[in-house]
Length: 198
Image (cartoon, rainbow, N blue to C red):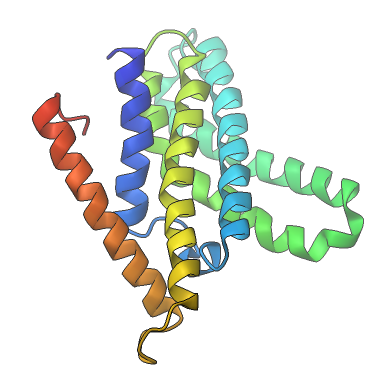
């Protein structure tokens, strides 16, 4: 698999997963405002790049040389858990007055990195270890492109004159459905113009 195909697969696969299956948790909260969606998208992307870089180093320096590939999932989850503890401690130390907000945000950020195990598993099959963090960055870009436009559309719909029955989470689901329809058309276009990416 070429690097370009790998990155496109990671980016577009995240759009499909997140929009079709409402992957981020909690989805309505992340889309409540455009600023929050941007903040969480960048936070999840940063956490994903960190976790995948540490995992890539362990995989290529320890697991593969000692034929311990069967422990890859366990190692990835361990890295995820310790990264959560480490960055929560760092964030609380730097911003002690925001400890409560950090305590609410960090589980959301690190839990959503588990959605990106598939692109990291794809990158794992490629020889250079730096493909994994690069793929994680592409997956984060896919997350950003999936969440932020829906949040922007939600803000637009929430200020528009709509029937009273269409409010709150209904607007989020409506925005997601419209974005999924646009994504489906893009999927069809890619499938007819080039080899399908997924």
